[in-house]
Image (cartoon, rainbow, N blue to C red):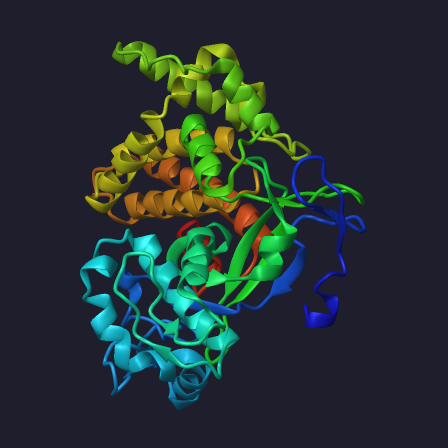
Length: 431
């Protein structure tokens, strides 16, 4: 999709509460990229600095060695072209002051996300006012790295911008792992939030180029229907979502999911009896097995009331931690049990094509395959068959969801892993 097609599928219309809404100008099919845009500026998270190019954010690997800026020794580049691009854009005005700023008590006191936003605002000021005379500011917590001596960018304006800045930035991720923040003003202007979005955001990383944002559809969208994206994870607890949206964006969500969760709030506690709990999780798996391919809302909206305790906010993080721990420790039987429960819960919380479902299904398929290849000689054939069937079933789900999501992030990744695992399974099933 080139710049001339950016608004091909979208038109801006009035909204009863928000400023405007982006609506579909024509029918949109699942997996369709309906919008693409480049950032004004991006900045890496502190945890990824030195691992990725500070300009294009490509990941260092056997073929890509990063070069360190000789001035500040804090920025890294995949090549001379990226270093020159970054230097001309803003780094030449920031380089000398960067280390003094980042060791200041004000900067160190900031939460991680605000540290990244402070860097973004500093870079943006330099780009918007390239001829202004900047110097190191008073090192207060909400000051940008650069400030102006002229009247063009008074300090109070910079501080006011910072107070609103993070609300309009995007979290960049590769294979759902966060690595940076970015300023994509057109996307901020166009798309409203929903906890039941019909589109999601992904990022394309290409060496030597800015990270491109793409909006991809989850399901069929009719002409005239509003196009929405999630501002936060729809699987977060209801109150957590509402408080975050109110604090960061100034509204409380009233989508179908929030209306439903408000009605059943507070969520009942999980049963303490082991047998009752096992029966409940088995019932959840049965409920989610027969997926309706035409359903465009999470299964939560139609789940029976007796399953509500599994929506308790403590259950999802505990289940996720149990699966991750047992899978990495080689406790594959336990991992497969908790992994199946987690997949069923994801199907309740998310739309059937939401990328988190595909990513977990892929992890579950890999876990089942690991159970096959590490099985001892005394493992019953019926158990091996069960592992293989679980791997195939999970891989089928992963392939459906992640092919709809499409290529994103760093090269390689889930789509290639699916192909490799599929070949392994096919080879393993040959007589």
